[in-house]
Length: 167
Image (cartoon, rainbow, N blue to C red; front, side):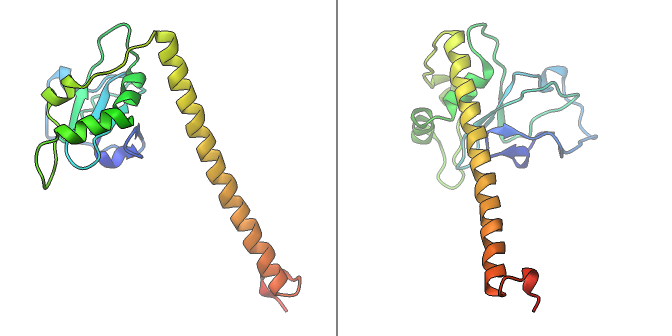
């Protein structure tokens, strides 16, 4: 079962620690398929995540709406990207019901206007987003390694040029 805890940054499904549920027997159409979107319908973060691989007998937790893209001229990952952008997020926040735990209904989600460029342009948008995400991850790794290196150099300097505080 995919739960919110299985999403990285609310938008990427991580598959390593999915919960196993043996006491339910869902109908076959409830099983997630590659290309489905998981939309977080309840709570303050209403994002969509793309299921990018085929899963065996896996369902979504109740706080998700599952969107099955069955239109040839829409890439599922593009649709998820659109839902996660500022204009769509503003529309969803504006139309959420409930003050303590806001929720988005299927009706509200179906009223969301999605720009629909060519498949080629959708692919370019997704690829650019993927490259930007990779760049951000690499920058974070570089910053972390630089921090470790500078801290080690400062410690060595403070200890008169000797590593690990030896005297």
